[in-house]
Image 1 (spheres, rainbow, N blue to C red):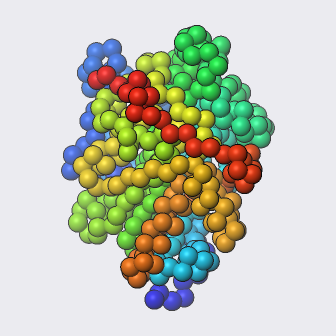
Image 2: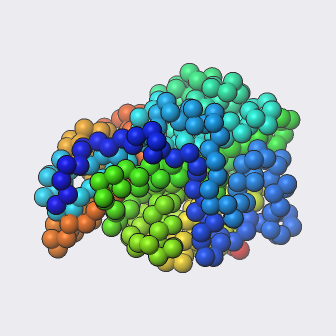
Image 3: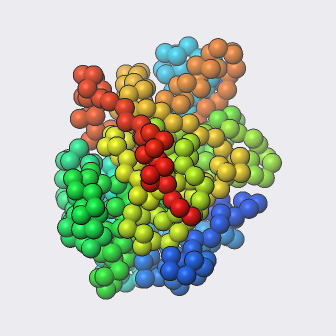
Length: 452
């Protein structure tokens, strides 16, 4: 048994990352190219400039550079909340009676309460450096909207956030924080854009989806000079910025001669999962190690476990580029479950390719069993997890119990993406027994599946 490993490991400053890791550079087969929705041809970088900041567009299509320097201003901001702690979950191990060693990387120690700030500050930096007038975005649970509002306040950039209407109604204090940082926030779909009005005409009373909110945010950006759209998940550029999670995790484990047998991350669009697994997947691809890598998604929006690997639009109004990914169809509207950040209809093209090629696994869980794991974890570890993070906790507990049955002392690492303090309505529903599970039927998935 490993000895003298503290409950909370903080990297010394000299070991913190100064570069992001671009996993695509080391993939033997690259993810298929994004396609221009008008021509069906692979996108050229300049075709992304009307939507994205120019440097972010270049990062989006970069398949060759494994390491990209983190700008000095971004590094300085990172120092206000990074490195984030790596915890050894001793009390959870004891509660489960497992020989497994359980670690979790905790990304909730900043005002946004999540990992999203890692990419938000980078994207706002590039927008400011380009001299843009403002940004637009979407948000599901509100963590990305909060993080980007913080980043835009730091760089004094106006921001408009389209928040999925279901989450907007569920999380009033999350939207209050976004307001506090100076951003405008609009429940989506709305009557403020052509895309929103069309969606409302087709689906009156809908609680919305990330696909709907993306359509509105993109329209707002391209119809206002000097504005650009930024996204908090799915895109290659976002997974690049989030690689600091995995790089810090690996470096912290190396201090105590540890290496994970299993790496677990919750999966919605793929930002935290891609960031956590990046250096471990590099080891796997290059033959240095062979960790199991497990994506955990909600049964209400199961893109990996029940979706199709095809080209699809990234938004509901079908104005964005086509990406080859595991998808339920751009028209899919998930049930208003409480894991708002895991409601996207598709999965990161990079992660989709890795999953399709057999480098990682995926499972899905209903939200009642996920909240059961969240409650158990909070009692023993003293951290109230976000509903998204609780999916990874559920899988980590199940895997640790398997170790109890077999007697294997495996090392398990999972990502705790953020805190659940703005999700108390959900916790209350779980505790009083009024929470229900929403699982789409095969017929519902067939009705929304992409045709390409």
